[in-house]
Picture (tube, rainbow, N blue to C red):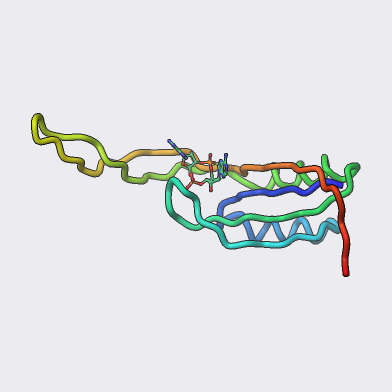
Length: 109
Ligand code: 2BA
């Protein structure tokens, strides 16, 4: 068995949960925050049998889109008395960041 940890954008999360459950996968949805942008994203936990892993990965890939977003990053300005001022930085986020872990044991008590 595998545990998929998929970090996706909030805009894709609801559709992905619906699609995964319609295809028989069990999903846990967590509200999370990206360390770089400091903005909300969604992390899904999906336990799957090994044979179902390609199907689950395919659904994630088809549902999650990459998007460009602008954030601000501090940049040094000035000479001797250097200070830091925010400047716009464009980054591409997603489609999905996916970790696949092998599950040692799966028990429902
Ligand atoms: P964030 O950390 O908020 O990162 C959002 C996007 O900002 C990233 O998109 C990437 O394009 C950019 N970015 C992140 N760190 C950067 C840096 N040091 N310099 C320049 N640009 C940077 P994604 O790579 O698609 O990541 C989306 C979200 O997935 C991340 O949100 C984070 O929550 C998670 N993530 C990505 N890689 C991870 C990893 N190795 N471990 C844990 N979480 C990860």
